[in-house]
Length: 466
Image (cartoon, rainbow, N blue to C red; front, side):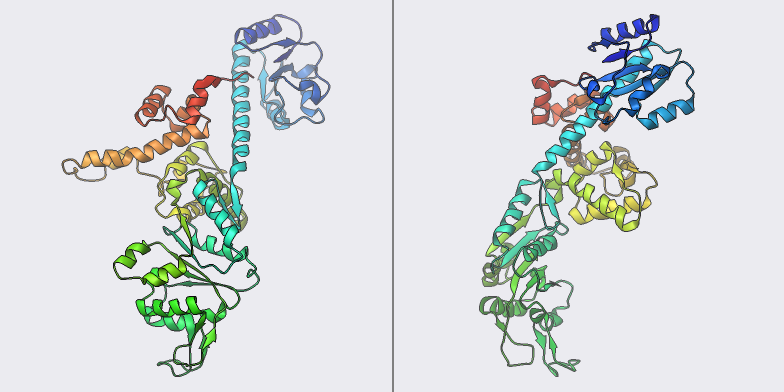
């Protein structure tokens, strides 16, 4: 800390208060003349009329260097605005007091902590993994991407399972783009979107006159995907007779168009996906076991977004940047409380739901920072909303509801602690509660021994020097 004020009672009072507050103090009659001379200082308190503003224009100065607090005898609001725009942290007009200076220093310390925290978060993103537009920090998803890179340039059939909206199509496209077939077609068929009676001809094509309305020969998607990849989405919707024909083309790489006897070759990489439990479908006779094993050469299971909250921040950052470009809007940011709540939300629609929520917020919000109010449709209802939702619950249901609501509450507390590096004071502020309430919730949810909390207890505390 450097106090560079004209000698006198003001300088002495401020220096004494700064030292009493625990800051390491240096006094100087001359101001630093280069950015290098600022190194190691937490803040500089200088007189604006005696060269203090010159500190704002030092070559090489950057935001991570000491906060500049200017003191002026005849400062106006316009002077303060100009100084802050030029890079001053605060602008104090005389008569000032040690209390005002200490308040500015506390704010500067908090701002420095926030910058360091953001830098740590950026550094922590180094453990992310990205492939063909897919980005993740979740170990299971990272393992999936490793498998994709390993098997992409083979002919092995791949079965992708996971809830709707988890990114099965993106993963299938990544397989195609990482293979030697990337220059050939990537064809997608949603088996649930085609009527069962038309699925066979859609896949294999048909000859003229094969059925009513077949006025000319028409190739199917198997031929359209020749040399490339055919992605069969929601394969469990395919009827059993079509499954039998699929088994043959996957196994023997030959097929016939509907109503035709000519046998054709199929040079296709097969990737299938479903959100159903296929082993159960097999046991209950709705899916052919031989087709299941033929397609399940390589299995990829995508976990739902609610089980990988660390990916929410990565995805949100990417979506917000993309939507700003697509819609010609200013880039939006998420405030810490909104980000913590999004990380703890259940997301039944998974990544697709998160994507739509962020696009809607980008379009509807007039602020550069998105808050909790911009995501009311996606976040769990408040206790007040639940209390006013309707008639009384049957006996015992209140306990079930309480247990159901505890999990998102626990995740919200955990996400706030993780986002603040275990700083309970900052986490309590994010959650809008006091430290005692936060401590009780941490104890209730078994979060006192989390890595972030343990790191703070190990000696870092909630404070920092400026």
